[in-house]
Length: 333
Image (cartoon, rainbow, N blue to C red; front, side):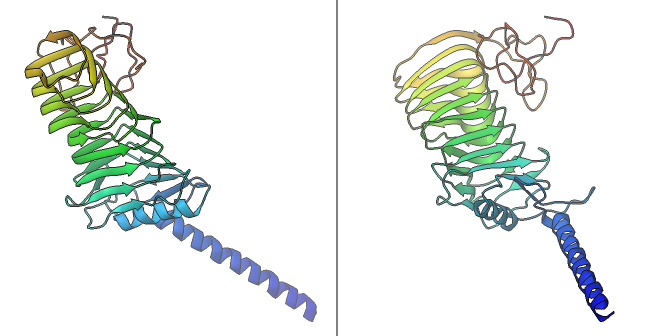
């Protein structure tokens, strides 16, 4: 009988321990869940809540990834407010792939205008930022790495400086609003982006091959500042800009560009290259993200390239439109 009671007490202890573990796990998932095997999910809010979290939380998630080899994604489910701290990705964790994936572009990661928001990185690691809205920082991203993918983000009020390896980095379907893209050393595919409201849209000062295809530039002092490398510019809209190309060194070949209210197409001391098929006309923007009207002179004026989708995910046809967007027709052109 005594042995039976001892066994029952042992079973009850196990059940209580398991119950306590379940409660702790539930609390962790409710606050700052590391729910999926390869994902750190941060800044969880209840439906309808506007609770924010800070960069300390984001830094903790980065540190957790470094300490756990099977985890490589940070999913952000609510916004981060302005903070006086920075998120640093250490350079002592080579070979890691880190993805920052935001639940919606309505979620804003805000920074301190005197600091770099996310900085550091390892030359042997790969980084992806997807679906996030960043606002206000000295440099929003200041990262070195093996390979970068920036897709479907909005960068506001700061600078984006990524690269540092000769791998091919992808900058696709982003909006740079008062934010300059400053590619670091490497090869870059810069497709389907909107650059606006900034002294410079893209500033290239290090070597590599830069494919700048299907982009829209508006309300800039200089659309492209080229100081190095080889640059191919195709299927572009540039408007309300003082000088589209400011070139010191390097080679730039441009083709199929619609210009409107542009004082200089090319300015500075050319380092080599050609300009062909420069069209003039109002692009007829229809919204603040610079989509174009169906009767825009940019429609059907592009060259066929490897860029098969536009910024909205619409398919580009055999006569692609210039700029970041492909006009959608109900029944053909």
